[in-house]
Amino acid sequence: MSKISDTQQQQIAEALAQRRAELCAEIRTELERSGHEHYADLAGEVSDAGDSSVADMLLDRDIAIISRQVEELAQVETAQQRIGSDTFGECEECGEEIGFQRLLAAPQATRCINCQSQHEKTFAHSGAPKL
Image 1 (cartoon, helix red, strand yellow):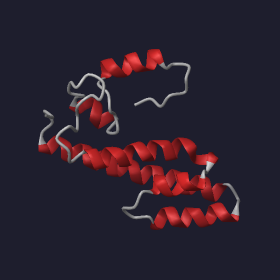
Image 2 (tube, one colour):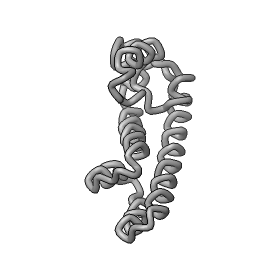
Image 3 (cartoon, rainbow, N blue to C red):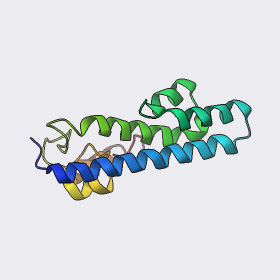
């Protein structure tokens, strides 16, 4: 069971919503900057996506120019789904608390700082996502 209070969960939910909006704005900018008419149309779809998964929509289109943002957006959207669960804030590796400060800084984090450090050492050269 998570030790994160309802107030802290609300702060993290707000941070996730803010990061989602920032990523969508970055994606729209990149799509518009590309100069491709098709990508400009996609930029409009990103604006209109609302609560639907922008990451799923864009991954379906396999847009390489925005792959980092799409990957992070998918992680943010997953964290938004997790935040209401009893396990939110627990490390997926060891089951210990991730910690409010870490979640506030990286609300999509799924590992505590110790497991994350170990994960980064293990997969440093594999290109695995850093959460």
